[in-house]
Image 1 (cartoon, rainbow, N blue to C red):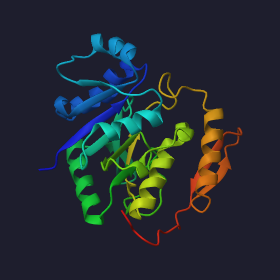
Image 2: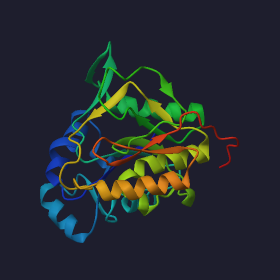
Image 3: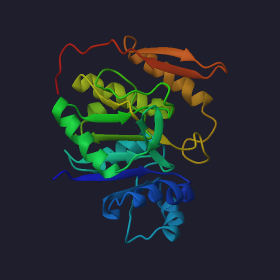
Image 4: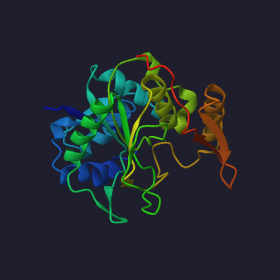
Length: 254
C-alpha cells in the first residue's frame, strides 16, 4: 500500500484554501486525515482555525516565507514519506485528452501512479506541465532537466540537507528544487499531459510584487548553476530563468 500525505503551505489565504484546494481534494475523496495545512505562525493559526474543522485537518505552525516553509515541511515528515505538495489556490487538475483539457477523473489514482513512476525510474521528484495550454502540452512523460512547478508536485522525502532550498531563491524556489533533485538523482519526472488551474499571483502567498525577488533569485541561480541555468527577461523587464534540458549528470551519487 502506498501511503502519502498532502502538504499545503498557506499564508493569509484561508478563503482560497477552503474554496479551492480543500474543495478540490474533497471532490476527489482524499481522506482529510492525510491533509496537513502549514501556516506561518501562531497568529495565522488563530486566524485559520475558526474556518477549519481542526479535528478534520491538521494545522501545523511552520515558518514564514515559501523557501523556509518548504524546508520545514521536508524536516517535519519522516524519511521516505511520500509527500504531495499543493498550493492553497488549486481549483482543478487538468488532463490532456485529444488536444483538450478536461478535469482529471481520479486524483488519488494519479498520485499513486506517479509514485510508481518515480520508483520505476529510481527518481524522487515529480511534477506536471507548468501552464494549462493544450497547444504546447503532450502525452510523453519526461525525466530530463525540465522545470517542476511548485504549485503541484510530489516527492519522496529524504531529510537531506543537500535538498534544502536557499532563501535567496524565494520567488523561484521551485526552480531551485528542480535543480537540487536533478543534481542528486540525475533526473526528475514530469507529466506533460497534466496541468493545473489557479489564479496566478493572488493576494497572500508571495504577493504581487515579485520584481525584486525574481531579480535576486535569477541572479543566484544563474551564478550557482551556470551550465544548467540561463538568465532571461520578460518583455516588462522581470528577471526569469530557463533550464538547460540537454544537461546530463555524469555520476548519480546519493
